[in-house]
Each structure stands twice: as structure tokens, then as C-alpha cells.
Amino acid sequence: MFTRKKLVAAFGLAAASMLVLSACGQAPDADAPAADGDGTGAAVDGSDFTACMVSDEGGFDDRSFNELSHTGLEQAASELGVATNEAESKTEGDYNANLTAMLDAGCDIIVPVGFKLADATAEIAAANPETQFAIVDVDWVEGDNVLGLTYDTAQAGFLAGYAAAGYSESGVVATYGGAQLPSVTIFMDGFHDGIKYWNEQKGEDVRLIGWDVDTQNGSFVGDFSNQASAKQITEGFLAEGADVILPVGGPLYQGGVEAIRDAGSDALIIGVDSDLAVADPSVADKVFVSIQKGLDVSVFEAIESAVNGEFEGGLYVGTLENDGVGISGFGEFESELPEGMLDELEQIKQGIIDGSIEVVSPSSPQPAA
Image 1 (tube, helix red, strand yellow):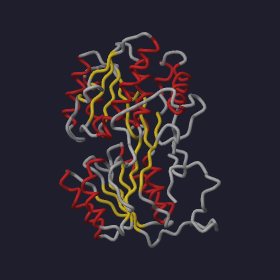
Image 2: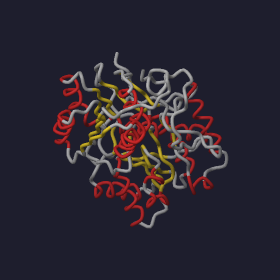
Image 3: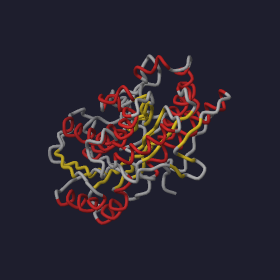
Image 4: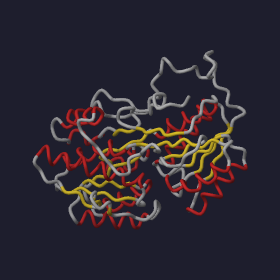
């Protein structure tokens, strides 16, 4: 059975900071069935199984959630021997057609990547109960054949916000999003709360621009591809003195980095979903830290459960506690953090896990009532 306990993202704590996340595979579960589901330990045979994926408009090379999800599909092909098929959406108008194309191709499980595919997935999944769906970043599409893969990134965003506030020399940090979707604003909510917590703990007044958590309004490009708009928004933030900027928009970080470099600024950005400094080494010198989601492992394990005949509809929520979300290392900027920051971040992480530090976002994944 595909359960939350079994689904542990590919994150592990590094000894140096006790917070650094790295791809290291799922932790073994002594109570879990063998790979083939029959207790023999034989390798999974996925040769008669087809796993498929449909991207959102960001495409599979977005260095973010589409690409990381696609890595999980590739892992399934390599380790489980499944056949794969995929459709890359260029516009929102492609979603229904691409999902239908995957159905026509005989896919056994389809992984739609992103909140924007929710409506199309809900309609098609309801009409095709024999096909299984594991949709990324959606918690409301219901059905015995639908598994929502979601991530409470407000928790990890809180850690990044706290660190950004501590690192900032100007006392101004910023954020902007691609589109105003729950899977985007949840990062911004956590980021805000982490900055607020720093101010409360340190008696400081680091200011966040680009997002008002009370009104749930802020700066958005409007899509996940308009680099000119991302650059323009970033230029505005730099003019206001921001020296750490969180772009929540897949490849839109590129416009942000371009603005920073053109301005000759020392400002840094924060990556989302994947470890951006690793995913795109060309911008590593401008990446302060990344807020990560275990998309690759959760996608792989959803496919594996379907191959094993153990797939169940429902909801998986990645958290700090189950290592489904977290933050990367700080790379070359670790030495520039305030003294004791890494220890403080570990203490905050544990506080979030045990509930003594509450992180709440209206966009946090919620099981259906």
C-alpha cells in the first residue's frame, strides 16, 4: 500500500549543518513488503506497465518542479523497467489534449505536474476510473484512482525566511511568484513568517516586500515563462534595497538573476523545488539557499506502488517531519551567516515538527473533509 510512512523524500541531514538536504534514496522500512509485493524480494517487473507524465507550461527543463518530477519518471524507467510516455505543455490550452493523448497511448498511471492541470485531471480521472493518476501540488482532486502529491513548503519556507532575514545587510528582502496559485503562495507565506520570527527573536525589523500575508496579495509575473516581467519585478526590488529575493516561479529565477547581474548587485536569490545551485550551476554564485520538495521520490514511489498493485487514492503531504520538504545547504554563503545560525535553524526545524513553533498558511495541503 502506498502510505505516508512509506513515502519518504530523498532528503537527508548533512553532518555539517544538520539541515542540508541531499538526494540519497528512500529510508528502508522494515515493515514494508518486498519490492514485488509478494514477500520474495524479487525485482519489480514493470515491462508490461506504462507510466506517463504531462508537464505544465514551464516544461521539463524548468530546473524546478517539472524537471524534478520528470526525474522521478526517469528513475521508474531505469529501476522498475516501465515504459514511459510524456507530453510537454506549451500553454494552458494543451492540458486536456495532452492528458487525453496519454490515455490514448494506453498509460497505466499518468502524473500531471502542477496545480494548473487540476481541473483537466479531475474531469478526465472521473471519466476513466481504470487509469491511475498521481497529480503534483493538488490536494482537492478526489477519487479512488487519484493520489495528490503535495508538500507543506510553508514549513521549509519559514527556515529560508529566518535565514534570509539573518543574512540581509539592507534589512529588506523580497519575493515574487509566477502565478497566484496555492502551490506558489504557500512558499511566500512561510517565507514571511520566518522573517517575522527572526524579528521577534532578535528585536530587529527586517522588511519583506512583494507579499502581504494578511491580504494574500503581492507581486506576480502572471505565468511561469515571462522572463522580461521577472526581470522588471526584480529591478524594482533592487531599487528598494532588497538583497535577498525569493522567486517562486520555476524558471523565472533566470530573469531575477539577469536583473541582479545587470545591476552589478550583490543580491542573492533563493531557489525553489530543487537545489538550484546544483540544478543550474550557471547561477550557483547567486543562490543563497533553496527550498526543496521531494518531487522526484514521491513521483517514483507513486509509480512503484501502481506497478506493485498497491496504488491507493488519497493525499500525501510532504513535511519537515517526513523529509518531504526542507532546505538545501548554503554553499559558499554558509561562512557569511550570523554566528549560530545553523544551530538555530535546526532548533526551529524541531520546533516546527513538535508543534511548539506554528507555521500556518491558508495554502497548506488539507485532506478532503
